[in-house]
Structures are given as structure tokens and as C-alpha cells.
Image 1: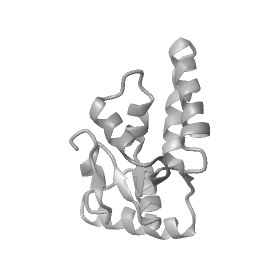
Image 2: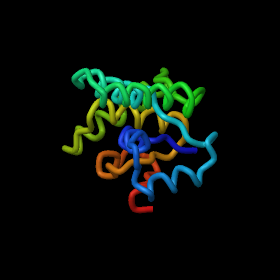
Image 3: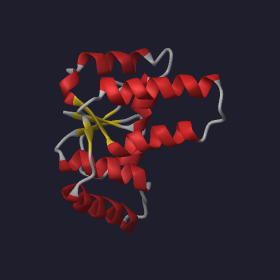
Image 4: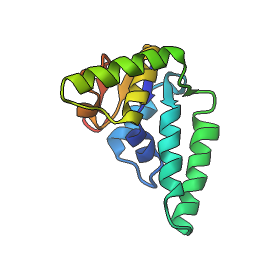
Length: 139
């Protein structure tokens, strides 16, 4: 099973997603693809910061479809086990001099707590957090 990083979900919301990403996602059973609640936060926050207009309206609609339909029942929450993993990921990366962004640490913690692989373009952001990492842009 797989947790899609925010950049993968964002790519899938584009009018014409990168073919390699679309093909990789399409080849996996829908029931094996998940997103973390932090990805939903990042997408919605990004849209909320946009000026009102047609582009924002389109993205609001696409986000609604993404979260209410495509990933319905497969948005993973941040729970107490994920919190333990979060602290480990965040502090261990900091001690190595390779800090990780709070949302990335949260997404990684949720993936690790659920025993899932991470799907992202930002491989270096998740290196060394104890996850199998897949880059669909290069798969």
C-alpha cells in the first residue's frame, strides 16, 4: 500500500498530468492508494491563498472531487502512533543536520505508522525516515 505525497496529488489535479505519474497511479489498485490528512491540508491551504477567480474555482472543484470521491475513505488521520513516529522522524533528521518540514514529517509519520511506502517526487525530503520511497516521475 502507498501514501501519495502532496506533489503527486497536486500533479493528478492538473488538467494534463505528467503521463508517467498518471500511468503509475493508474496501474495500482485504487484501494492501495492513500493520502495523509496533511496532504489535504496543504492542498486546501494552497488553494485558499490564491486570489479569487476562475483558476481558484477550478481547483476548488478538483480538490472536492479528489477528497470526496477519489480518496473517499482513504485519507489517513494523524493518530497517537503517528505522533510517536513524527517525533522520531523530526528529531532524528534534525540531529543529522537534515531537518524535515513539519508537514513532510507528518506525512512520513502517517505512512510509517501504517506500514506504507511513500510516493513522491521529493525523494531527498523523505530519505532516511524509514520508508520505501517511490518516485513515479522516474518509475
